[in-house]
View 1 (cartoon, rainbow, N blue to C red):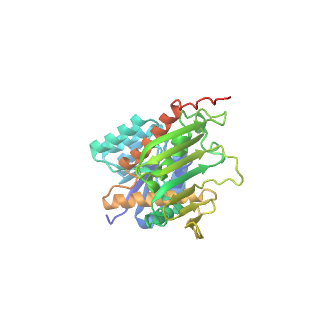
View 2: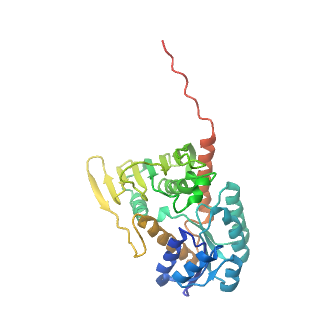
View 3: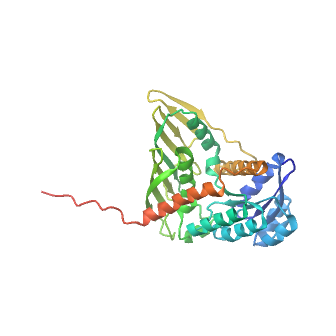
Length: 346
């Protein structure tokens, strides 16, 4: 595909700004942002003015007027099933923001609709495309730690996510679906597919409706075990938002990714440090730059797959495997754990 890829963005809210900037940054690689859409006309018009693209307040009107090649859906997850169905029926290639949907049955329905119509459908799962994670994956694939046996993947922050996304207070499923899905996806990418999951969930903030902390234990098909942690209630200083911290151990050594964007490789007797440099565009702001850069890279990877006529790395079939881990974590957290037997006293 030598011509430009005509991209439209549906949803012009808080996080969608990163998607819009990302598509503009990819103009030289073939992206042509041709339109924006939001149910709130003010948001659509503001995005249209900033990114020089026509505004729409209706998905149907946008599709009829523009006939885009690729639509990037950056709306609330409860709208995804309806929007993805409309795209599939019209044969429009689609990227949908994570989480795919609030319920497993919705995820399956979206996947079935895409399969029925043979649609290109990818999920914007961006943590695996963060610059540090891409470098970690490359090192692991090169065998620097040998056969992986154990890992900890942790995203622990006290950053105020509610100021920009106040609806999170009222979600019936919160941190596992909103944040845990990212770190569970990383566990799959770095250690392979998962056999079973055990999870403990906590609600530490009295203002939220659902869980805001989750700790999961995963057994991978390789035999490796990983601990996956996520919380918005950490009280550490300095806060490490938006960094994911990794510890990975294998038969030949260990790898640590710290919050200073450093990879530390150890063979048990000595260590070496590798600095990770995130390319930062003028529109990116600390501390969000790590997340913002991952949006550009995710857009790039998915668009390249689309232009080549290939399945995206985060296509619907792949993302369902991550969604299944989310479901397993919720199911485990809801179960009555095995009780510790009472201690015998003489």
